[in-house]
Image (cartoon, rainbow, N blue to C red):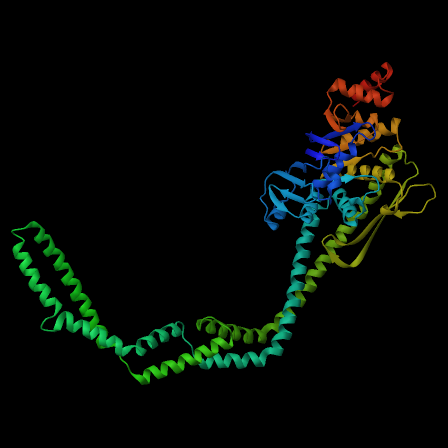
Length: 548
């Protein structure tokens, strides 16, 4: 990720590894500013407050690897170039104008927000989590129940069911419409049938009309050409033939005349051919006023019919007639098709019901074990009194996931009531629950990059160490970025970034440094004690880093 001129960040570039990245720093140094910059490329709205130097524009750019993201259909839908290396860029001008780009193609914020949901899952305290969504909760249960193949098979049947219902609705509407329009369609069909139009007839008639309308002129010109060129005493061909013979005779004395004789011979042959064709046209052209009148009457009828149906060419009337015929014939058997489809829908629904019941039973089977595993992980994280209740019930309707409705309820205090996740007041408790559940399904469900912002609020010591271990295990299969104040969590990072303020220039700027091993020890030791850290803190930091 590259950040330029955002808040107190002048220029920062960060590279992220595929596993656990931790970000630490002093309070107010700019850790949350990094998230703010990232939120810009994920589609969050922005204004000039995001700009550090109002004489320059703010640019935030992030590059993502799209392996196994299955995002090609999204790119095709929005006419975007697909590449495994996806680059999202956001620019904000000093005037407040915002622009967004996906692989250098301008996009709106809605598209940016849609794709970002598949790329990054950010948890910040009290922010809306995807775990609030019932669809996400059910997805976790299905992952644990190994329902992937069964759900895919069910969804094929469900889509067929949807298509059949849509077809039934369309046919029923069409039948009603056809019945209402049938008399009018019959009238129009009969009218076109009586017209007895042949393909290409209009073009043929228009050509013949032009010929008949100008028959006298055509005969006059072609007759004049024939007489002038071939038949009169002083006909052109006679003159040319005579000249050709004389020039040919003189060709023995002058090579230039010999070549001219050859050319003149070619001209003579061409004129004879043209004269013959003119004679043929003269003989064929018939200026019959009776035929011309008949053609014009027929053209009038065709033009009138074309205008009536708003068609550009008469041949389209033939297509229209065929469509009327199809509608009339389709009306006859549409009712029987509808009856057959209704029977088919009953069969598909019965199959859906059976498959949905199978999914329901498998989900029920994993819920107790899932709850028990949650307890095993979450109780040691300072939530000893937390209880989980997962309500799963069937409904009379089908959707892409079956016929179940599901909701996870939590009671975080002893004797407290079970409440929906979104009603839990403590952001820290929500963060820990989110971490625990995602770590449990991480092996079975594809997760986007996970970012946890200060989920260690209110915990320390052994609890923080256990949370760090969960984060590390989760990051074995998924990219995890954690902004933390906890030395225990920071010690688990594969990569450690340190955010600090630089006051050396006229204006304070935030800087980000990737720490090496010795720098990590110093940073974690400082988090454990003070700056500079004590020898005991340094020793403790080394031990934390070496703990597996």
